[in-house]
Length: 618
Image 1: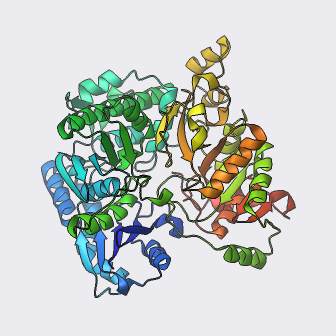
Image 2: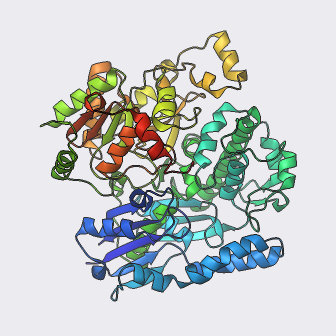
Image 3: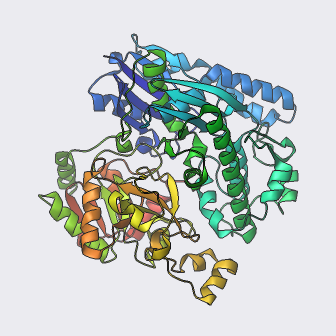
């Protein structure tokens, strides 16, 4: 038996994953335990959670795999600072102490963090090897082309390759500073959102704008070749040597200084979002064409932060050269922990691999769970009034009735998700048919920007009846955007069409009903679809079935169980705290249902300031 622990840490989204004899046993991000969003520290609590899931201790590990090579990364930093000196002095002064104190000494840091770990061998994969392994080895494909795209690892920013059986081979790369991920992050920062956090907000903002800067970006910022390779014009960017992403030339070209966080979003920002989104999709489509021609493969797997751009993924599926696509659900740095562990098992130890037709990610439900007795004991100890259901059918029918009457439900079930998406284990659920639900959820539950869309969770067997997904195509990890079917759309009046085109108030646009399920239909009539099946998520599937039997609609709004800036809840205590601080109506903890109307002193105002003040805006 071989027990392999994968670790990613010390940049953002620290995580741990445990693979035993090639089976993914557990994986979790440190932020879920520390309650620090995107926590970069050594993932001590995530590691312990993984070890607990397998019932082993650190001294039982055979290998510990780290997701990148720190010396290569340090080499890149030094070369970059030398090449840009003296402009990078401030950044250099800020970065070096932590490198000299911690990052150059990872072997003792990791061994110390694991209590000595005298037996296990310590292995370092490269950053993009870890991404590639996380994309290919859990995928349902025996062979596939591999594409990894992110900000930067050691030197690579994009890699192309192929996976066959139990081996991967990366054959080409693009190198820092020429990075699609950093280009997208530069626009993210310029539009007032946080890098490594706000990229998905920029993606959500894009449909409000017009891609009027697309040609300008392609003409002046990026030299994009027909085969998808590119070089950035570094005269516009400061990220190689500075503490910001963009420079004065960038600001002059796009109409002024960067938007201040939380300030008014102007039409210019919407147009910039639409433009960089269009350029990103163009680059990915060209790379995909090249990769398919070179490899002859019909299937593609992807990882790296850019692979979380589900709008681009949708275009790759619809317009790209590959017949099928699988994206690692934890495609960012957290997934590197899983990739590093699988890299050791298959690539280095040479163990064979049989591709599971439904993938071997286990629905990405790889985090800790809480037994019914633990939840019951906690509820009793806290003296919280709750109703316990003895059977699943009654529970789902009762919750479905509440949802159908417009109530908002916190849904806490089974193992926690691994990756940034809530997939029905730590979710907030609502009725998608309500025209007011998107505004209600944004402003009274999540306390976040009003323009952001919500995703639908839909019964897999009904997905093609509501969304333009190819027959048989599933999207279990919410990583593909698809159009809402035309026969589900609602025609706009002339006044509504004018408003959608010209009103700068995003809240007004959000309130325009565009389909039979307005709460999950974005302004461009698309949706970030999650298909739900009985095999991966039986209770969530049963709830959707119960809701469909009541309403005829097999869809629920599914958003992550947290407030803005807060990591997704991990424990029943986290869930209850979040429930109290919002205006959710019901909290479902396993078999127990807590009704806000039965709580004394349940005014969310009293709890909101306490909870929200703990988390900086993301």
